[in-house]
Amino acid sequence: MSEELDMLTGRAAEGGWLRLNRVIKVVIAGAAGRMGREVVRAICRAEDMELVGAVDVVMAGQDAGTAAGIGEVGIAICTDLAEVLDKTAPDVMVDFTVAKAAEANIKMAISRKVRFVVGTTGMSASTMESIMNEAAQAGVGGAVVPNFALGAVLMMRFAREASRYFPDCEIVELHHDGKVDFPSGTAKATAHEVASGRGDAVSRRGLDGGIRGVEVEGVPIHSVRLPGLVAHQEVIFGGPGQTLTVRHDSLGRDSFMPGVLLAVRKVSQLDHVVLGLDPLLE
Image (cartoon, rainbow, N blue to C red; front, side, top):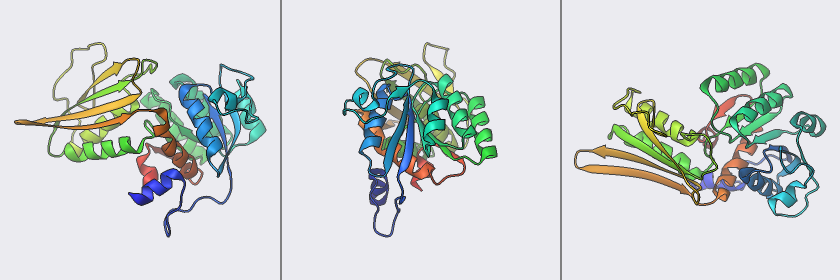
């Protein structure tokens, strides 16, 4: 665990993970959004990274640092990603936009041999398959991560293990009211881990098509969207006379930043696409 924390914070444990010896040039798509502004702050504070471009459809012309609350950094927010990628030749594009925009942004990065780290959720399976095929053909590495919090990665690991002994399970995911997709990418990834752990993806009970009740790989998921929340999830297992709950809470968006920085560092060394943060911790 200590080595994983060293990786997440950018410190190298003796005899362990080694940091790159050069500065990683980063462009952020969605730089004016809530997550985008947090990423701007994290990238600007990382000694081994340089923010070279910021893109968003709002706050055009405003300094990305000013928008993020850290003062001017000399990078104006632009609306044309293609222009920014061509002018800055970044090593990595970080995308926190919306599903429709993310697909186009990722394919634009692939066409320019720019690696990508994507936290945008809600993309369809067919979209992901298309992205992975294009990246493989171009030999471009990337990471599509539904949740960058280390605690969320551990929650999914624990859920997979518990599903071997408690096959009956439901997931409740709770997010802020600005999150438009449901169920969340984290919930869907957790459902996959549960189904894999118990050895099937067979529906155990059908939901009646309620507002946000869906079933993914045989695991019911319930979505909550309310102001005051950030990102929270409960995985509830039930058995004769007992229940087991695995819960993770992100109380602030800063909880995701160590994982984002880790992904940026790791993806710079990849020639293929990985799904989730877990493969980057190996």
